[in-house]
Every structure is written in C-alpha cells, then in structure tokens.
Length: 213
Image (tube, rainbow, N blue to C red):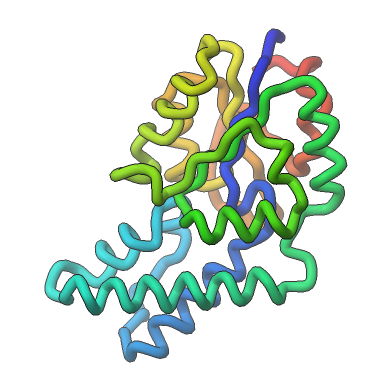
C-alpha cells in the first residue's frame, strides 16, 4: 500500500487524556454549580470545549459566563495533564520517530492550542510533525471534516495516500467524510463501533505498509 502521510487525532490517540478532560469538566460543573446529571462525556468527545459547553448549557447563558466556564475547564484540564504521572502512551516518541522515517506526520485536533502545546512539550515531539491544526484554527470542529480537508490541502497528496487515526465517534465521522483511509485507535474502555481497520497500540502503525485498509 502506498501511504505517504499519517494524520493523528491528539486526545485519546497520542496521549491518554480522556480522564483528565473528564475530570476537568466535572470540576468545572461543580465549581459553577451546574447540574451535570444529564452529562455524557462520550457524546462530546472530539469536539471543542466551546461547542461542548455551548450545546450542553444551551443559549440562555451569557457569552461572558460561557467564556469563564471554558477558561476554567481548560485550566483544569491542563493542570491534570501536567500532573498526571503517565499521560503519554508507552514508547510514543520512539514510535513517532520511526514513523517519521517513512511518512509525513500531522496532528489534527479539536482541542485548544494550549492543550496541543502541552502535548508537544511533554512528548518532545514538536519537530516530528510536519504541521499541526487545532480547534482554535477553525470555525467548526469534528464531526465536520473541515479540519481534515485543510490538512489534505496542506499536504498536497492524493487522499489514497493519507491515513487518519481517530478514536472518537465524532472524529471517525469527520475522517470518513474526508474520504481518506481511516484507522480506529481503540483503548480497553472504547465504546465506539467501527467495522474498519482497528489498532490497539500506536506501535501497530509500524507495520502499516503490510496492511490492507
């Protein structure tokens, strides 16, 4: 298979940030006295914090209050990520370094630039990626495929030569709608149903050239 580039989602794919974001939302709702009895993190995984907060709370809240909630959540998530013992998946840097020898590597994430920068600094992988795109760069987040369409345009490669690695339902839908190859990264707690090619460790991508997608 002639694959030239791998595009990675970030949260849940390159580092195990799900628990940090889940805790951050819970802390935020508690801090602002928001009833979260109907909250379902999986429903919003892969979307921006702004979209998530705005949709969950509805349109009755002022924009200034929504911004305060967003800022609090992002600060809480960043703190958890910086203090978590092992947010990075095992052998991540080694795997990415080996993949870089064969493929152009890209990150497309709906999360904030701050979240992305924290990952790049903790993983020492900033120079490994050809470029990155985050939620701050675009007006619409996943499941809208816009983020992947922008990456495809930047790569200037046929879609048949691009693989997208995603874990969330929203991310997978965005990847499918971009018409590239899609690989589902599945963790032990994964609840997403996907009939296509699935991996359970990022190092599985080292054998990508021998796989049929």
